[in-house]
Length: 306
Image (cartoon, rainbow, N blue to C red; front, side, top):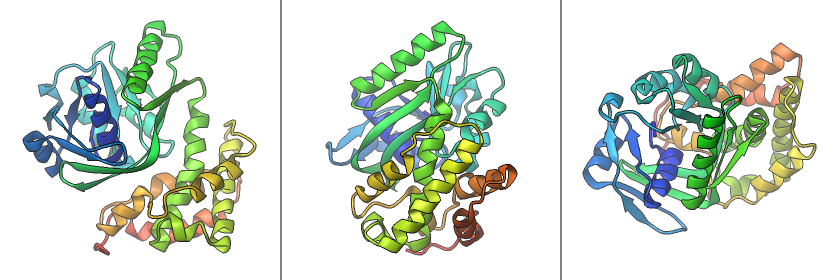
């Protein structure tokens, strides 16, 4: 597991709790805390402190069977290079990054490695080094099926089964691009709105005027995806509006937590990518462009707001 932050730490913790041999590659105070006291995972399904191997040097961990990448988009190339010694001929890498550009970036940094595109659904955040808090019922991953390699396909199916035994919903799909763009359609809207407004889901999605903007954001992303040839459900806008209105009232997107502590933002990989692809394909994205302009000045980090 590369970078066991909020989402990655949650999934790694669940797998460790189920008896899987999980190791964490990390380079910060989070690593030292996990090494000293274990990974504390707290949330509605119970609280656990889990032990796992940790290192800031992939070479000390040996070859891995499966490598889960759960870093921020702006960390992806560095993280992939740092994980190179985990990969042998039969190792599968699975990208659980937000956005749609992560799998190609990992594959470019690790020539010859098998990297499966994927996405994760969970709301989790590091509240202190070695301490992760998750909220809500979301707990699932979707990743692409290997093509033309039956052994890799069987291993990927086994990964999905291991996840399900650990209480993580897991699906192997033949159309990973649809899964990634489908998630981005709602994720980009939620990240933009909770971060720009500095408000959680409850007050945001109870406001009719805000919901109109959110609906336009979802529709713009879906239009860009379809212009790229990605197949999305016809009702994706309505589906995402229903999901967002059903979020816990106090829930924020992870980008809000990043800006609140003055950290870098994934805004280029979310809103920026949608705007750039829209321009390339001739698809208007005015709502994304406006919110990208608001958040772009903070992409490298800014003074903390709380």
